[in-house]
Image (cartoon, rainbow, N blue to C red; front, side, top):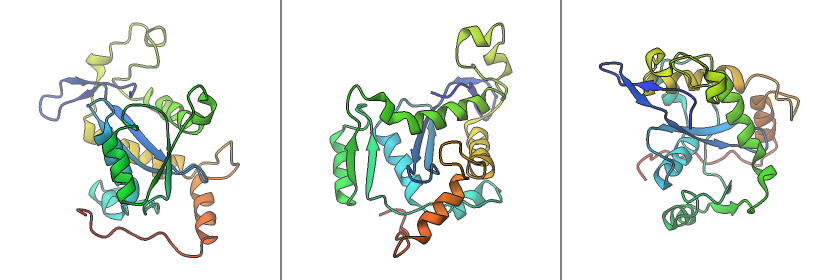
Length: 205
């Protein structure tokens, strides 16, 4: 759940805190795709996050008027998830099976195996705390700050801000665990592949 109150597009009134779903490439630490929603995590949000990861993103960046590169696309061979209900549904299992994607579940009681995504989300929230309407990470840190009265960003504006952080900052900064920018490591890994991932051209299929 994002540490930020968003507002509606017409009256700019507070709507609540949205949820963030992230798909991350383990090898490079690049963010393959994401999805923001006011609805709690579900099979739908996971599916839309995976869809965003699979599709090429040139037109997506153009839609938001963002100059940058996000060259990650293609169906993954496998995904690694935890035991949440949104990941263990029959609908997700069938969808992945139809597309040749294997699902690997994190063992119960092994939280250290989930550290890669948790670390990135933690860093993302630190950036969020600088935005108007942040709830910070806890009531003590928030103090007397009124998140609702300071809320200013719509869902679309938060999405655009998120893209800027991903392609203009996170992918380009040196990652402390791999000691190089995620985008550089991703490109180096792609160069080692015998062929590029197949691009999905029909977004409705």
